[in-house]
Length: 171
Image 1 (cartoon, rainbow, N blue to C red):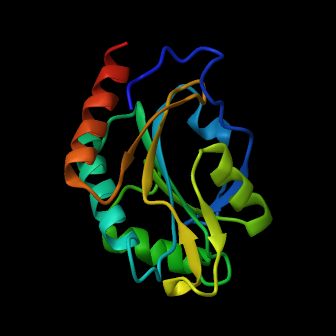
Image 2: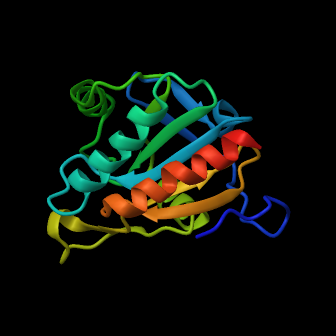
């Protein structure tokens, strides 16, 4: 997907309130003026999440320490993915807790938020791990406009995302 101009024709991410891996409240205001990459995952996912997270980590390493780039991973499994579970997961990844926020919240808040990101997240007892979700990594600009996405399971798509981020940083 290309990078639209970011005007009113692009989706704007709504307000949200979630809790990160350190127990801090996180809102969309924490990302104001920042380019960020979002995804929807769960730590016990037996299918695409490990690959999706590994590819998100690749992007993170490319922009590690860049104050203009942030990451947020929304857990779709609030029963299991508690603050301590998310903290251990982030620590195991070796990420900066301010640059990459792994967050949890009530499913009645997270699932509609996934739709706002044009993603999928829902419980599904027939799916491996009990959840269905897309593997997209979603690019959002500093004004909360959705500017692009990539298939988080494909390294070539992830490299395209790196290029899109660099374009936004140059604007």
